[in-house]
Image 1 (cartoon, each protein chain N blue to C red):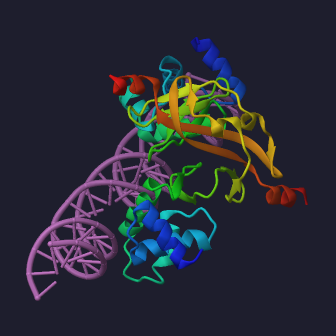
Image 2: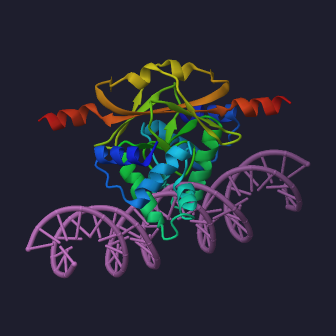
Image 3: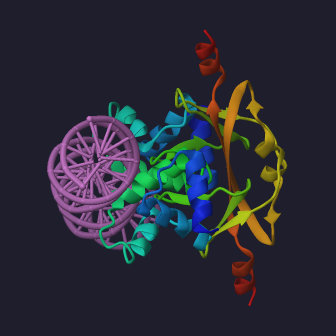
Amino acid sequence: MKKEEILKLFKEKGIKPSFQRVEVFKYFIENKTHPSVDEIFKHLVKKIPTLSITTVYNTLKLFCQKKLLSEILIEENQIKFDFIEKPHIHFKCKKCEKIYDIFKMCSIIKCKEVNGHKVEEHHIYLIGTCKECLLKTKK
Amino acid sequence: MKKEEILKLFKEKGIKPSFQRVEVFKYFIENKTHPSVDEIFKHLVKKIPTLSITTVYNTLKLFCQKKLLSEILIEENQIKFDFIEKPHIHFKCKKCEKIYDIFKMCSIIKCKEVNGHKVEEHHIYLIGTCKECLLKTKK
DNA sequence: TTTAATTTTGTACTAATTACAATTTTAAAA
DNA sequence: TTTTAAAATTGTAATTAGTACAAAATTAAA
């Protein structure tokens, strides 16, 4: 994703492209992970020494409101963030703590109504032992 | 659920039935809600004036390990707890903040394996506007 | 160039959770 | 019954994520 594309996306969403905001966004497309606020801050402060943690919080909040990112709350007392491409669910390994994106469909994800309640968001978390950790324990 | 049944359940799970533990457990069966640590503490401290918040944390952690309760992490900076009866998912209303139990099945809940990862727990959260709040806004 | 609006920064604060040592309770052994 | 050891509870202090907010800096418009 090139800079012009980011600027175009920001414009569509009504986000003013400050240097800090573009850098935070770039973090997500360059590192396809599920970072915490702290990880993002620690990474970007190397490049932007004046960066404030409050800016990171503000920017992530804005991106979530504009549906560029979504929050992940999975067995942690720390919010992680997720770049929204196509709908997916998350798997977290209890051993290595890694979070995997799982692109698997399910009736729940499509449902817009349940017991009369209007559904606007779906968050599906699976927890267990990942492929790699299963292999390690077998050895 | 009578006291003898609670004691029997604790014995099965290998939980020593201290007065505090029994009272915390009773809170869940008497109030079918999704309480936070603070709510449980504030309620029980009336009956047990010497109760410590640390004991509540310890007890809830133990109950989660023993699979009597599970943690709910849904759009909050506060963990809530859920009594495990039969598998269900959660719906949270954005307006009134209430959490509903939804007893609806889905292929994801049954799945024990995904992309080679071994699945041990499922947490499904739906967020939106609940039936009651929808009615209120229509008026 | 001036002005207003927006964004960023930095500090102080709050609230949830954890660490840990001291005390109390419980259960087992003598 | 008394002694001893183990487990649970308590209370305090510390940690940490996140928020509030005002001042400074930046941007865009008049």
